[in-house]
Image 1 (cartoon, one colour):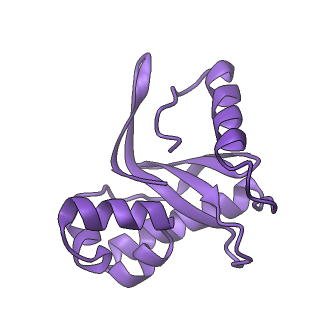
Image 2: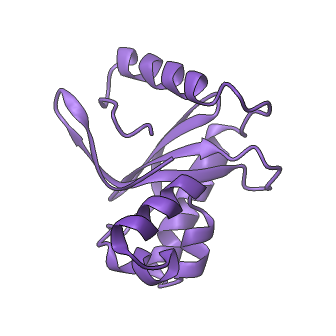
Length: 145
């Protein structure tokens, strides 16, 4: 969902916020702050590094799980560890925009959305394995909604 934005400039961040707000206008609750998003991104990367597919899939947005299962023709648990996602590492930067967030880790960039269902984590990963490309949208290994 958010993986189509350029890195580094304020116009891209404003665009990210606008798209996130318009795409999720029907949801009533706001997601937690950027540090919470960073915590989920780091936990997602740690689950992958530990080989815990079930935990990693639980942190994905439903649309992302559906995309993985559809493209890999198997369950998320069976597929997510085989996707070649990079080892995430520690959080370097996190920015939240209403219900959307981008988190840069040592070795990966992730996009997240506030789940709005009262979960204590408050965020779900919508895209991972994202590489910035100059003047072009991010290229993400895993993406969904």
